[in-house]
Length: 406
Image (cartoon, rainbow, N blue to C red):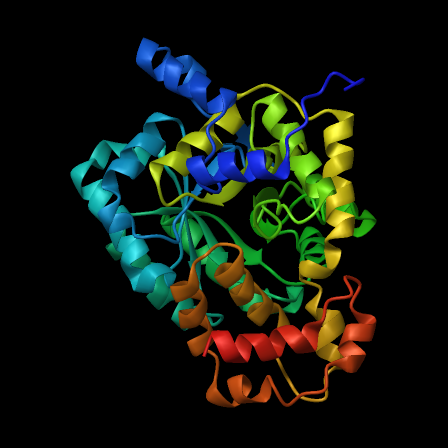
């Protein structure tokens, strides 16, 4: 080829991915981590830290997402800590409470580890009494006397963060049981971030943020506003709907380009987010050591994405926009004659199809009220589809969810 690049055929690419496992390719970057470990060069395999807003805390730029069987993966926790993944994220509801209990078991066996960990958990409650009950339960489960950052879980509008929460957070901070307070959000992220920047009492936010949505003007404005307000930002759902597929030559070119550079498309997506210095950390679901190693490799590797690679990611995002829900539920849900949690259902479908976590998808879907589940196949989604910026076939997907997640 005239440009000197090696062409990767569809068959060769799929064969390679099949042998190594989807999402677990360990090319040059991971090989360097393994080599460093074998040689005892610990400084080469420790995840860098970044300031968490203006809180004064520094956190590892890679965070361990706790939505997996932590009690059965204690060795993974130990290794993550050894590699500098010291930001641990969980929630009161993850794994039916077993995520927090698993962290507690780890701290019981390794009490010195608690001082190294920036510990984050979340509350599904919105009222002070419920928040206090869940907060105290989290302390007990995790065998700790304090929590570094406490999130209100999954808000869809900034009005959910009311004055009662501010008073509650101030009380918990004065007691010494809590350092920082904020929220996580999967929906209407930009509005939530812009609103938080005006409140003046939000310390941290975890939001959906990836190569698909990070370049929009509104998201840039939202991130800038939070940075100016000193709010620490953690990105989640950074894969933007899963690994690059191989249905077209453009997709093969994208995946093959990253493999030639020495990392996978998944690692490239992490790097795309890390190139924004205002993102303190990426919260990643890492249920096995292979994924931990691959993500640590991406974090410690100093190779930057080229302009061409960034352009390829943006092009891929545009070409596949109709297959990804960007979380702007204020648009689609407001257009429906009856209430349907479109954003939540889209997220469950993502867990089912893109993450391969079918049990979790079905369990979350089962938590929806029966009348809501029954309503999915009865609502007219035509207006919502017309207004959807992504041009998603919302009706078809809602009906599909009713079939495969029930």
